[in-house]
Length: 497
Image (tube, rainbow, N blue to C red; front, side, top):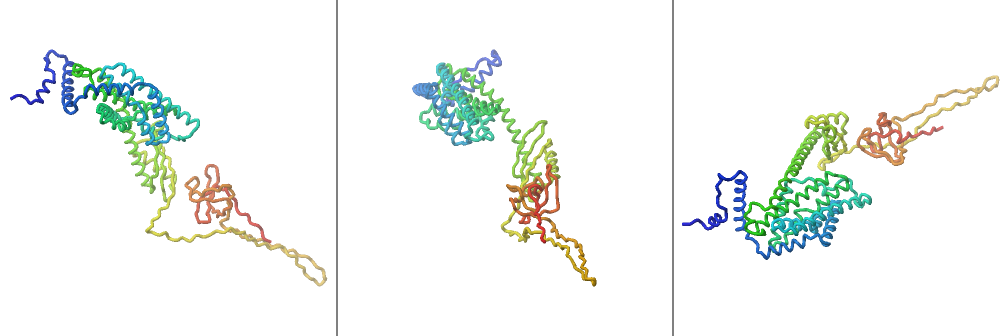
């Protein structure tokens, strides 16, 4: 009995084994890699038969037309760039997706891949020129739009939008997405019945948004943003070209059998080398991203636990690396009773000890009250303090006539002390035009508000804060807090005769 047909075909397809004793090390490596490639090609042909010569000519003609840098191509680049840039300024993902569908940059990249396989220098020159010119035009236009927006701010940019920042740190995951997207785009182009899948591929392998992010970074002077976005575009472009070269070769777009039997064509070799070189910066970006994510998770965990130890709730947290390896942390906490200065020192030391870092902590506290619908509040009587005049009792001297036998009248003046009743504490009235807030303590959180001409009760406590004298007061609702003394005046009593 003979060998199975499939095995016989495979043995005929593979080259005969040479004499390894006469081969150098690199010749052995090349031979082994060649056999692996031919095995993959053999079984790949069984799953996906090669396309016809007519389809090869049709795909080549189609890519030649779409990769030519003509007027239509540049119009689409301008429109898609404008849509993507405005979508980034307003931080709209839907608008950016629309720009991906309009962008014509996928065709030149696939044209480069086909030209590398077919050896078509004309197509390679046109597709390369179209890709480079389109990319430069998109960068310049997006930078110009952002520059105009800074002069005439029709969109307020307090910080970089999320849609820009999300395209500044490419990772090996982006390379995997571009690889799968390039294979999908090439396969959809080779198989005419799958052309409807090309819009989805254009969305997955975003090419225009990274270029617009480069322009945004250049216009705002953020070289880190521009560099990261440019790296993402190069990753997508090179990986799509490499994957298209691989799939064009498998589906029979090569010139002849001798070229197919070679280990790699020159285009495949260049694509593989460029793809491997991209792994170095992408791997470093991934390492930095993972380190920052771990540090961010550790800081959030430590701060939240330590804030809970001082009977507070963490509401917001921001941190950044400052000079001399100092970690600056700004937090906003919700408290039922006001934290004191000693609490902030204790909290900062606890966080620094757990993180093993020098920490500079800034706390913003908001006083809140917890209400439980199942537990009704206990009614508390509130005394209403009405402004009253200070009563003054005055005894005036009285002229007394004394009759003597000599009938001589002598006037006698009797001095009488004046008794003044002074209420304690005193009543004040607010004189500030716009009113002032009542603070829980000088410089602390706001617990109430006093308006112009509103009465309040002045208590005894006083304190200097930032060069101003603060006094303790009680408003008409019974809230006790602090206001600057200069914001009001005491009620002047009018003597009553």
